[in-house]
Image: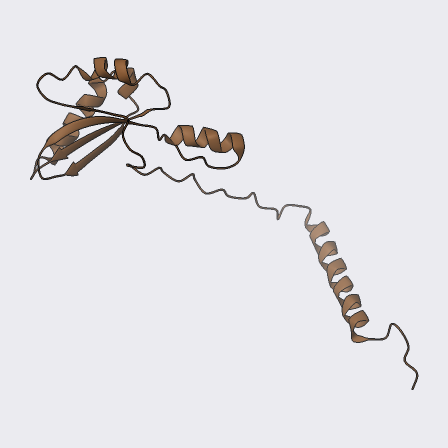
Length: 151
């Protein structure tokens, strides 16, 4: 029996694969690149409302400085995110929302982009916290290094 090189099934499969590749390349070249779709990137995730420990806390009450003054003294670092948290009891949700918006307006320019959280609680009250966790800071750090850096 004489065995000849190059007549095995592997060569037949390689020939068929090459023919399929050429047929596909020919068909795609006739389309003219119109079938290429732009990749759709998902929107960046929205950062959670409480992802780190607060650096400083302000709350309404007797003897508390005005929010604008407090933010001017404590919140000078641009990496700090201002969060307004208002808790309500019972059916006072709309009043709590109005209180949160009023705090954002009276906080000055530092509080204009504050994250507002209005939630039911055991007792009503408002507080403002400063945290090192910002959606915009995280996006800037992701774009710079290619990876997401925790705030």
